[in-house]
Image (cartoon, rainbow, N blue to C red):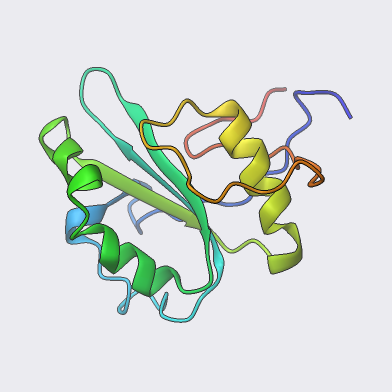
Length: 132
């Protein structure tokens, strides 16, 4: 598979087509309690950077928890902390997570990356536009 052949996981956006700001995102209202998927956190500003990427069995719980995470929220002053998620089926989550961890230079390392035996599944990152 060519390296530019990536799946679009349909990252979540607001009704106005923007990415969610973590500080004002209500996971319960968005129906994320108990929902499984992959999420990405990044900060905006002049030099946006990926903060963290992981899989979750309960996106609602995990996104709420990051509001109290000092390591993540210290980037709020750098243009805001943004979040997006994709409802990736559990059997594909490790492969997608592995690909994102290999291609994103995150500020916070994932403490539980997928094992070496997992095959990376190429996907577009939030905000990435398909070529062609």
